[in-house]
Image 1: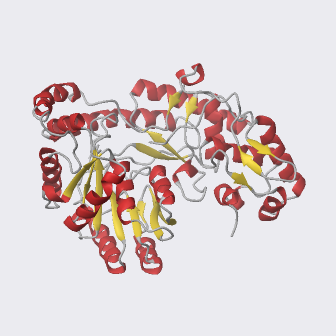
Image 2 (image 1 turned 180 degrees about the vertical axis):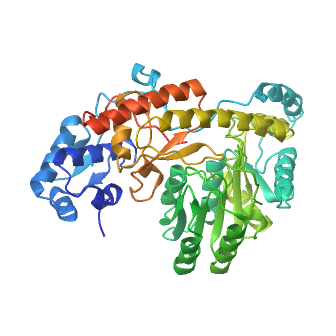
Image 3 (image 1 turned 90 degrees about the vertical axis):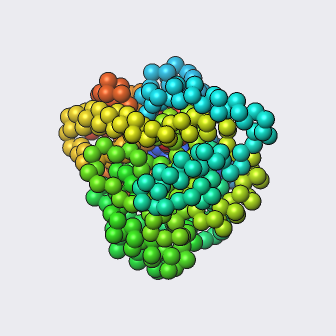
Length: 467
């Protein structure tokens, strides 16, 4: 089995690379968080054999990384990932002027303040209780269940648990029914932190491709049949990051296949309500079978600062989740739940705000990206971002060059299991148009640096989470 470093690099991507280029790509993996501080790297001899390069090339690459503070080496011992001592801390001037495109999320809905004020009597009425809310407020569970029912999946409140966000919901599910060492089918690309959660719970990812045109459903179903994974994680509506939507027939086919092979489907609906002009609305995958576990969130339709999510599942699984939850969390904050009840009472206002903001953001991204030679913006009918084709396998190099221009931009491989998709960038359509225009100007400059060969690795901006 090859080393994790070569798996992340992709051996074909570094074939023929100079020592400097190889060091740059390893540095990019460190800056992007795909190689972790303290992680042991292969020996010079082992890496040379894996990459079929001379040992002197590997020695030179490691030497460059050590000189910049990105690895530490012990003579006759190990090489481990480090960060430079001068690495910027949160809140430094270097970050103050940066535009962060690693976060695909809007500011709060205009109705948040009024909803907060209206929620206070509801919160006051709860002062006589313990304040712990393991299952979630009945009114909020009713509201979430009602939304599922309106969309075509009849649901009752006792099939809902309120969580502290969608990622919290995923981790609760994995804690309750996860099995270390089992396979998990994942889309390629997908939400990076879901991949990290699966890794942390001991799963071995099995990728299935998704592009702006949608899923290869034959590959998806055949992979389910051949590997029989214990778990599958899917984002069927306005897929993050491609923006694709899985059709109704394919939803039914995938759900039936997963049920037949005993696979639990975790369906992430965080982006489901982010419709701009798709023109049609598929039924929730939960309507297709009992093996579907759905997670959702208020973060994209209301505000990321509201850590409110939910799980929809069959009652026996809900009971298992409730039994496990107290081991790491005793419920969800009551104030946020009270506010969420008020917001969900007027979904039309929420979705109208989302639609207008995303339409403006999309137009700004399209205007900026189409001005960059070789870049192609796909049709983006909704969701958080545009999955841009940059025309060459230079995404990681562009991400590094962008940091020098004050632009934090995760490369395409950040959304994959094996360091592929170097031709792609996820560009959020969630920023205000004027901020997007500035970001696209910096992106254009960074691209000129890459194409002109003047880009050099940046050290002043720390790695950011991808949201």
